[in-house]
Image (cartoon, rainbow over all chains, first blue to last red; front, side, top):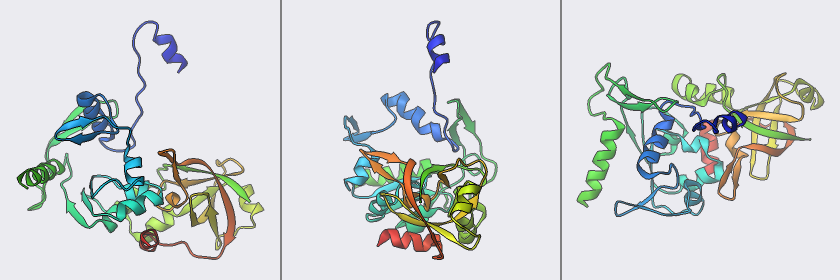
Length: 159
Length: 123
């Protein structure tokens, strides 16, 4: 922080929290770029809604009908009281690996490994976007998380 | 006895690695543990066959204690996992993962495996 205070006199310097896992800053980067915030994003009729809710308050207040979880393991990572509330409602998991969440999910949709079985864009820890290619073909009927989400959105639009 | 709990990511005790390369047994062996200072281990009269029951204001969990010289006296460190998250909580919509007071009891009760733990959460 002292370094920032000194450097701030000569120009801008920012602190970026390092993510612990692959592409962890990807969501933050995209959300900040498009909406100017990286949490408490709530949408209604394709519009961002101003809210003081967070994912924690939404789960704690049981203010959701179902959850679609992509590539993460909240059942391992949340305090058990939140996990219990998450598990109490329909839970759909899109992921390519086993986890505590896959053990309890009502529906598990396997996805490809981006950068191995499908191409895609991932953000490095220092927020540099890296284009990833395909190394091997994915098994039949296994799609990328991006394609699965697009199909889910298309399905919802049809209803 | 009371200790100060911190949950921390550790390369040697990583749940993603166990989910990917291990099985439910290795997951429990590597993640359902708590690191404590050897002096605290001695003060608790612990042996390798005994477990610890940890109770915080948020919940209770049984883990297997391991001695680690780098852990400060009076504290216990648990790797981030579903076991550690039995005694973490939420305060004012913020997740509380660190600096939690826990009551420590030595026990012969077994550590729950992941499926039993998930069932206990669901109940």
